[in-house]
Length: 152
Ligand code: DQA
Image (tube, rainbow, N blue to C red; front, side, top):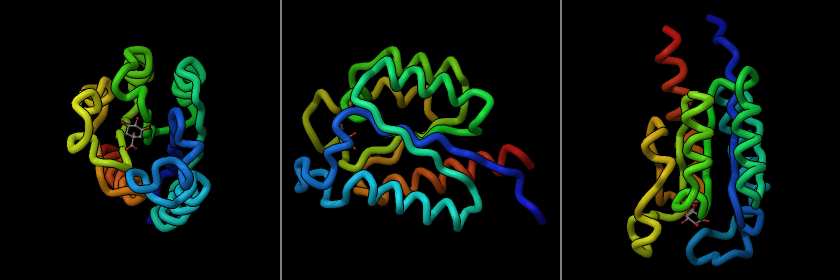
């Protein structure tokens, strides 16, 4: 059986370009390039394409999400600190109406109170938080599973 082609836009938000050197006790020692490699390996196993982008700028992230329409079937996003502040990112995800999975390296509910609220969660299929780099791999698996369930 040949699987329908699936392409996933992977969106990394602010400060995630510093992974590896940024608070490694919280975020681990892998760099963003390492995480993208892990996603690439998993994508090969799942027979899907992953296309990572990173920006520290809210408007650029909004534009990236808009550009997913037509080219991608789903979005995997770690919005970083914008998770807790950005109505614009939330509206962009709702606007393109593509299945979206929210991921976080750290368990945001075990941390400061201001991290407990996510603007993204209500417009996402689901959220994976607290498994380090594995959160991304689990999130990709969940998103692809969801997309394949939908298409049968
Ligand atoms: C994060 C959690 C956010 O609260 C924080 O601002 C980040 C990273 C995570 O992956 O654990 O930048 O999204």
